[in-house]
Every structure is written in C-alpha cells, then in structure tokens.
Image 1 (tube, each protein chain N blue to C red):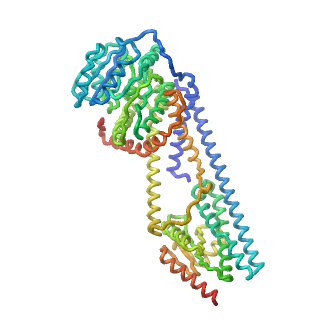
Image 2 (cartoon, rainbow over the protein chains, first blue to last red):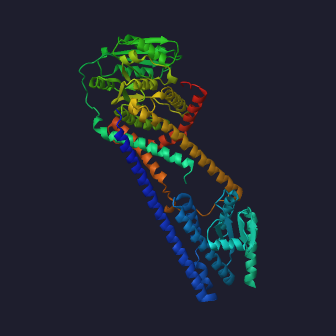
Image 3 (spheres, rainbow over the protein chains, first blue to last red):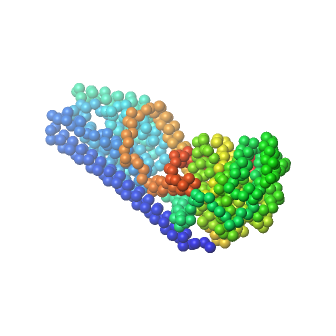
Length: 220
Length: 414
C-alpha cells in the first residue's frame, strides 16, 4: 500500500537539493573570499608604494604622500572581514585574512605616524584592542563609540585588533603596551593605556589633546 | 556553527523540503488526472442527495446559501434540503421558514447544542443514500453536485468526496491572504487524495455515502472540528475519500485579525487534539500515507512554525539589545557613513537558498491551486499578505492552541 521506493527517491531528491544549496553557498562564499583577497592585495600594494615613495623622496613630497594612504578602504575591508567571519562558513580562510589585515593595519599605523610627524598632517591615532573570544558587551559599546568618533573626526585613525589574533606582530604590541585579556577593551592614545569603557566625551578630550600636542610638535 | 539550535533548524528544514518534494513528485505523477470539466456532464443515474444546512446566527448569508442550493444543476426532486436552526438568536429562523414552500426543503429548529448536534439531527432525518452538509456561510457552484456525484459513480469504493473551497469575494487584506491559502489548500487536497490521505472533510459541501454514518456512527463534538474528526475516523477504517477539484464552493472567510484568530485557534486546537486522540494511527503503515506522511507533515509544520517564531523573537531581542547598547554608547548618533549597496553583503548561507526554495514552492502550490480553479496561470501578490499574516499572527494561535491543550481549555466557536 505504501510506495517505499517513492519515499526513498524523494529522500535523494531532497538530499540533492541540499547539496546544490551547499555548493552554491560555497561557490559564492569563495567568491567573497577572493574579493577580500583582491582588496587586501590592493591595500598592501598601496601601503608598500607609499612607504617606498616616502623613503625615496623624503621630506620634499609631503603633499603627495598624505593623499595616497587609503584608510577608508582599510576600514571598509575591516567591516567586510567582520561580516565574513560571522556569515561565511569558511572560518579558516577568513581568520587567515584577518591576520593579514592586522598586519596591514600595523603597517599603515607606523607609516602614518611617520608621515604625520614629518609633514605635520593633522591626525590622531587610537589603537584599539578587543575580544571576540568571550561575550564582551563593553567591547561592542566601545566599537560603537569609536565608529562615532571616526565619523566626527576624519583625521582620527582607529586601528582595531582582536586580542586573540595569532600573529607575532600583534603579540608584540600587546607586550609593548602591557595589555591583558582581563582588561578589555583597551585603548592606546599617544602611548597612554586606557582600559575599560570610555565614552565619546572622554575620548573626545583625549583626541583634541592629541591634536594640540601634534601642533606643538610641528611648531617646534 | 553546529549549535543545537542549528541542528534542529536543519532537521526541520530538511523535513519541510522533503514533504514539499513529495507533494510535487506526486503532482508530476498524476498531473494528467487533473482535468477540469468545462462542459456539462451527464450521469448514468442521479441518486437522491440530502444536504444538511446547520445554521447558527447566519441571517446575513443563509438566504444566498439556500438559493445557491436551489440552483444546482441536478434534478430538483433528487436534492433534499434540511435547514436546521441550531438555536439562533437573530432572524435566521424567520429567513429559513420562508423556504418551507419548496417541496424539497424541510426546516427544523432546536436548542443550541453545537454544529455536530445540528448535523446529527439532519442525519436522523436523512432517507437518501447520499448526504452532505453545507455551512450556511457558503455558496455552491451550479455544477458542483453533479461533478461530485460523478466521482461516486466512477469508483464505487469512494465513500466521501470533498470539493474545492474558494474564498468568496476576498476584499480585505486578511481575506486576500486566506484566498491565497485556500488556493494552496485546493492543490494540496488534490495531492492528498492521490495519496489516499485526505485529512479533513470540510463543512462546505463534503458529500458522503450515508453508509459511512451507519457504519461508523454519527458526528462527534470532536473539539469543534467534527469535519476533521470524521476524516480521521474514515481513514482509520480505510474508507476512501476523494477530492473533486472542479466542484467549486465559495465560502465567506473572516475579514479581521481577531475573527481569523478565533477561527484558526479553533481549527488548530481541534487538529492537535484529534491527532492526540488518534495517535495510534501515527506512523502505522497499516494506514498508509495518511499516517506516515500527511499527519506527521501537519505536526512538522506546527513545530517548524513555533521554532522559527522563537528564532525570530530571539533575533528581535538581540537587535533591540544592540540598539540599547548603541544608545548607551553614543546616544542618538546618526552615522554619516551611509551604507552604500555592496553586493558583498548579500548573504549566501545554505539556509538562504533552501528557504528561497521553500517559499518558491509555496507560491507554486498556490498558483497550481488557482490554475485548478480558474484554469489560468495567475501569479498573485496576495502571497505577500499571506506570508506576513500567517508568519506573524499564525504562531500566536498555534501557541495558544497548545497552551489550551495543556490546560484542557476548549476554545469558543466564535
């Protein structure tokens, strides 16, 4: 009375549909990874090129150099990587890309610091350490604060690092600034370590101080 | 990635897709058997049929209901109509009394006792071999009865035949959503009939052989869904139920959310409790596809709705939590960086593709149902209303029905 063969055939059709969905998901996921890689390569070349240009032409070329750093692209990439980590199944690939991204951030930071010091470009830097390994609502709040600040001060550069990034360069920074995982979120502004949550207002004063400090330095 | 919630999600999604594929395969196997008879048909014999019309406060619709019965394309002397006033408190009795002038109409008045008691009074007064009921808020198409009877003529084993029920002149968004749903049901019931697993004999114009009641007994209260219980009882006793897709019956459906909520609460509560009463039938291969596929499908559907709903609630709470966090952190800061459209952020998870498939099938089923009714391909935007109303309000009547089942509270009729 019951057509078991049909039940079995339908099972295989359903399985086929799932495998197709899996294939499509992987296919588009890989496309996204490729897209991320392409962006990173571009940023990497840009940074390398700026560095080279900077060393080649020294102080004469301040004008040209400051325009070539594309921090907004770096932020954009950061956003995409974060999204990718949450939404793409291929975590290994994404975490590799994130390491690479951390490295690019450090390079951008070092280069920009040099440029701003030598050319007197108005800028402030914040190194931001957070964690995704555990539920850190303070970190989420701090990220929002930093986004808002970046929005308000285009000259502000925020570099964010996941505490658990398995990369020697990031570990070196953690070591230099003596950042512990029990005190996250942590911020570094002008070599000062701030731990815990800081509001927009609190950070704003720090940023403005940083701008003033810079002005003084450039006058001297 | 592989949390318990995810595993449950994928199991439910797999089962849902399995059921959909099963129905589609059944459709493809039988598609040549779905013929719509446009011309008038003739029968070898025209057996007498009794139609019972139970009425409880139906003053607005009963006149039209009875008129539609009088216009049936069937020998007039072979259609006996029993109008039963189940203790109405409005002018229903005055209206139906006027029909006593017709030789084939009898009217009865009794104290209110529920629909099943009215139907049973009708059955007690039935002398014909065929009997059916018609809810007093529905209208029959002229050709419906003759087409239904042709199914009994074609297969003497057929014990009951169900028509296609269509929403009568849908006006409000709520009714349009139900119109979409009813087209889907038209198609699904046809598929169920191919599988020998029709699970409900709806109040509007299901026709039985009188023998069914002689053998299996009268209507029961059955948590106010006597039509579902009767189908379960017949399936349990291997009585064949067929579906006459080109017999059209138009029914009035609730036009507001509260009315719809009440109706569905009664239906779902009834279905849940009848499944509990007939649990012995579940997964028993003796009862065929009815027990292996159709009833479990109803359970899977209920479970999935609740699961998806709780998932949505979870996301909503999470979203609100983030908004609060956002407010705590930066106040009402409007971020100047507008998120330009970037194809990168289009989600590409496995579940997304599967859910697109599931919804496409839902639209396909309704469109096929409409094709059966109107014999043309219409892609209706009512699907939007359907999805919004049934996915947002639906879980509430489902949860309430489960709550009532646990507390043994029988919902009121209206």
